[in-house]
Length: 344
Length: 241
Image 1 (cartoon, chains in turn green, red):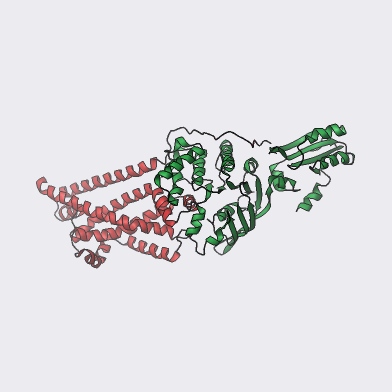
Image 2 (image 1 turned 180 degrees about the vertical axis):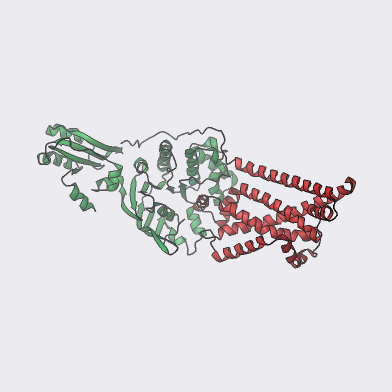
C-alpha cells in the first residue's frame, strides 16, 4: 500500500548538511498497522512527511496505493493539482492535533470536504457521520478549545477520514496524551483499521504503541531502518532489538547448577501447552523467571524465560524437545553471544 | 467664542475626521492585508518563498513606514492630484493617509499572521489544500482576533495622522485644534476637541478590544465537562504482558 525505495532526505542549512533519511526502504501492506519507532532525531518525522510529500525527498520514490507520488510532485516546491488530489486521499493525524481554533468541531471535520468541493449538505451529513464514528456526535458545535486532548485527537481522526482515505498517517498521534487516553485513541485506530480496512502508518517513540496495535514494526536509527518486519518475524530474528524491547524478559539463574533458557513463540509453533508437556514428559520442575506473551489470532506470540534444573549438558534432550515444537530456544550463557554476533 | 458658534465647527470637523479616517482605513485594509500576508508567504520557508520579492516589499514597507506623515503628504502631492484632481480638501487627504497606513497595517498583519501555528498550514496541505486555501481557511481566520486589534491600532494612528491633514485644508478635529485653539488662542475650543478626540479614540479602542476578545473567547475554555465516549471496548486484541 505504501512503498518507499531509497528514500533520502538531506536538509541544508547555512552550508551544513544533515542527512535525515538515508535510503529508507519501507513496505506497508494493505490493511495493516505499521509502526515506525525510533528516538527523536532518528528521522521518523521526515519519513512520514515524505510519504505525502509535505517534505520533498532528496532522492528515492514514494508509492501510495499504486500511485508514484514523487512523479506527481513536479520540480517546483509547490504542490501541483495532481499531488494535491492524491494527498486528499491520504489522511493524516498530528501530535498537536492541528485543529483550527476559529472553527467548530464540525466545521473542522468539514474542512477537507470544502477543499474537495463537496456540497454543503453532503459535507455536514458526512461530518456528523464521522463524528459519530469517533464518538463525538454531541460535540459538533463545540470549539476545539472546549475539548480535552483525547477528544481533540478524535476530531483530528474524524477530519483525516473525511476524504475517504485508504491510508492514514499518524505522526506521534498519542504522544501528547496521557496513558489512559492513549489507549482509547489506539483502540479507535485499531477499530478503524478493522472496520474500514484502513492501512495505518504510524510513527512513535513509545514502544507501548507498537505493542498495542501494530501488525508490523520498523526500528529507525540515524535515518536508516535497522530492523523491520511483522511482529512474529521480528521475534523469529535472533538478537532483534525490537523483539527484545517489545517482549522484554529478565531474570537470572537461582543457583549455579541451573539452565536458563529463553523460549520464543513466534506464532508458527503448535498451539499446545508446551511447558506443561515438557514438565510431564521429562519429569522436571520448571520455573518461569519472566514472560511477555500475547495471543494473536489464537497463536501465542512472545518470549518466556524459564529455568530448568541441572546444567546445560543435562538438559540437551528437553531443549531438543522444545526445538522440535517449532520454538526458538536461546540458552543463556551458551550460544546467545554467538547468535547475537551472527545477527549483526 | 460661544457654544452656538463652536457647535457647527465641531460638528463639521467630526464628520471630516470620520470621513477621512474611515476611507483611509478601508483602503489600508484592502492594501495592507494582502501585502502583510505576502510578506509572510514569500519569507524564507514560506509557501511562496521568494527572497528577492520579500526583500523588496519589506524595504518599501520600512521606508514608507518611517516617513513622517507630513513629509509623505507633501511628497505625494503630485500623485494625489493625479488621482483626485486636487491637492486640497478631504479627498486629497485620504490619499496620503491611506498610503501612509498601508505599510503600517501590513507590518501588523505580518506579525499577526506569523503567529499562526505552522502545523495548521501543514494540516491543510495534507488535505490537499493549495496556497490560496491556506490563506483563506487558515491564515486569515486564525489570526482574525489579532487582525482586529491591528485594525484598531491603525484607526487610532490614522486619527493622529489626520490632525495634520488640516495643512492641506482637509479640516477635521486636529485642524480645529490648531487653527482655533493654537493660532487664535481659543483655549476652550481646543480643550473641547481634545476631549472629543479622547472620547472617539476610547470608543474605537473599546469596540476593537470587545470584538477581538469576543472572537478569542470561543478559543478559550468553557466550563463544559469533557465526556469521553469510547468506541466499543477492547475486542479481539486484548494485549496483555
